[in-house]
Amino acid sequence: MNKSGLYSFYNSVFPHPMEVFKKEISGFDKVLDVGCGDNSPIQYCNIPFSVGLDLFEPYIQRSKEKGIHDQYVKSDIRYANFEPDSFDLVICMDVIEHLTKKEGLILMENMGVWAKKKVIVYTTNGYVSQDEYDSNPLQKHRSGWTVPELRNLGYDIYGMYGWKMLRGHKSQPRYRPHMAFRVLSDITQKITYRIPNYAFGLLSVKELSDAENNH
Image 1 (cartoon, rainbow, N blue to C red):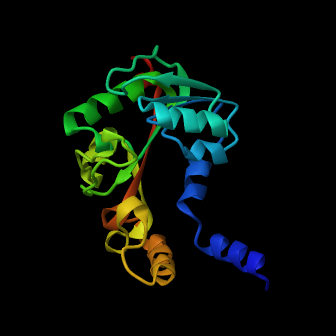
Image 2: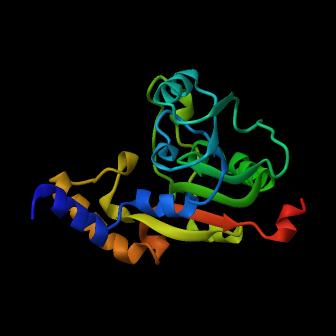
């Protein structure tokens, strides 16, 4: 088996979290990406129309250069405003931990109003310290979120990136050699996907009911 074949086989046994995300996002025509940054996973998905919302101008410009979104809105996500049911799906990836708990709760309530069918939120499991970088003060972490908190908000939770203790900054392996611990992390992903309390990251998915759509 050549290197390409081995890689494909490995991914079939231990799917990358991106594959889980792509499955959750498929079938939606109009998507809002809250706090889109400069490297949104939307670029790997076949979305007919997407809007990127971010405040940091350098990230917006880099995202535009990559052609990730069809439209961009420069705004503080805490004060952004869209009409109810403006999007089929609203995603918020690696963002709510940059807000205070109160701000995050308000944002998630707003996303449930803007979305017609589904809201997807990804965040680390609990508080993970991070200071600002990229000359962007918005990168500082201000809160941590747990499985019970997110479930109480109506989300189904899936554990991402394997056992929490094996990952660190930017979801990268905490220990060396990195490749060995990446493989170990992928193996534990088989367990933590269904037992998210022990996972490094939390993919939270909320299907909106008809009652919730009558805001």
